[in-house]
Each structure stands twice: as C-alpha cells, then as structure tokens.
Image (cartoon, rainbow over all chains, first blue to last red):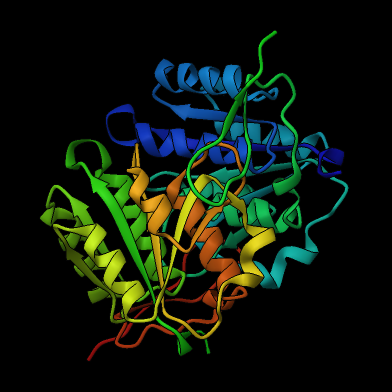
Length: 180
Length: 180
C-alpha cells in the first residue's frame, strides 16, 4: 500500500559524541514509519549500524543504513533521477499548506539535519517543510512527516522475518517469539 | 481551541549521562505540540530546565518543567482528581483503535518512559497506547499522540511573548526579532 513509492531518509552531519541516540532514534522512526533506509553523513559511527542490525534481526523488515561522504551529491543525483527532495526545517512552509503539492508518484528523499544545515540544502531541496515553526526535534519532525505522507499507513506495516511480535495488550507486555 | 483541556507530560526515569538530549527533545515536543508542562522523574538535571527556559525566553509561551521524586504518587493523584492517565508504550493498544475512547473533556497526563518502565505504570494507567508496535522513540511517540489528540491543532498554536518569530519561507531562513 504505502510502498508504492520509495521513501529514503538523509541524516546530515552526525556527530557520534553528541548525536548517537538522536540519530539512532531518527533511524528507528524511519524504519517504523515506512522509510526504506537511511543515509548518514558526518562522522562514521558503526554503533548506529549495529544497533539497527539488531533491531532488524529481532523485529524484521529490510531496512538499511549507509554512510556517505558527499550528501550534497546524493541530493543532486536524487533529483536528476526524477526523485523529489524534501528538507524538514522549522524555517520552512507549514506541512498542512504543502503536503498536497508533493507528487504522490515520485521517490522521496527526506533530509533531517543536526544542529546547523548548510544553506545549499535549502536551495537544492524541492520543498522546505516545517513541522510547525517552533523548535522541537528532528525525530518528531520525521515521524509527523512520514505519518502525513503515508496517511497513517505506517500503523499497518508488516515487517517480514521478525523473531519478535507484540500482541497489543491493555495492561503489561505480551511478546511472541517466533522460532525458525 | 486545544487548550480546553490540560495536557501534561510525565517523563519517567531520566538519566542525565544517557538521556540528556532525548529528554530535552521530549520537552521540546511537549511544548511545540501543546502540552502545558513536563514532570521529570529520575536524576535531577538542571541543564534540561535551563535549556527549556532559554527556549521559552526566545520562543514564548508558558511552558514549565518540574522535577518530582514520586511519579507513581503523581499518577494516582491525577486519577483521584478526575484526570485521565495515558502511557505510551509499544506493548499497548494501537492508537487508531483507542483514540476515540479517551474522554475529550478530561485533563490528560501522558507518561513516556526511558529504558524500562515499572509494571505499576501499566496497571495504573487508564490507557496503554502504542504508536505502532515497533520500536522507535518516545520523542516520536509523544509527537504522534499529541497530534492525534489535538487533531493537528498544534500547527496553529500561538506562543505569547515570543522574542523570535519565524516567517515561513520556501528557501532559507526568515526570523523576526521582536523588541520590547
């Protein structure tokens, strides 16, 4: 349903000492809300990749992480090959005003920055989108964007080859472990 | 519009060395998406409060942070005084199945945990709600919950006494500084 078009995330400027958990949460959100994978620029941090590989091993799906050295090239190539580039920034146009303009049939690259995003990304992006014009978090911004662009379809995603499956419960925790 | 009822967040079990940025992002999301304030339990961490005071000074609003020693008492008292307690957990009932059951006219306490939430909170909460049954982030879970419970009204929130105001722009950054 929602995998008609690819959605990929670009996490800019990762700094391991400062961003480890935030970037991990960005990756977890990307996976849980239906993105295919995350490109990470900045300082290479294998611990993020290991963490996500553990998640995939237990919870399934085909998510990937890739470190890249030239994120601006990725953005330019994404557009050249017909994709749309969206940059989430509090300085952008409020999502409710712009969501319907994003082509429904094109592959989407979603950029989320860390502290300061170079201005080239504002200019190269097709859409600079604000999830509200107040400071909050790239983690929440990504979740709300993916929610809107998929019309909430993330809630019904299936993750093949999971070893762990949650049985939703009113109180407490129910987890099924699937043996092979 | 959305301030008919109070929404307050309880962040459980803050550990400064590990959670500093995640708890800060939880607080930023709480503010940006219309909660009134955040109670934080765990180890007292004044840097979170300072960070949020700076945000409020620049971006306005009446948000507050309060450290508490006995969060379970807070939960029990919240219920005694007629409020509703919601716990966000991947083990809970999917939000789409439960959102309409939450009373619209009661004050809501939203619990977000860190690594492991004691089982008392599952039992004391009126609703254990999953923002999807996949691992992601308390930051994104809180954002999606507040989005759903306010019907997206956070996008139109006003923050009185702001010194900084963003003028949404298609490219780049436009910020107005309001002098007194």
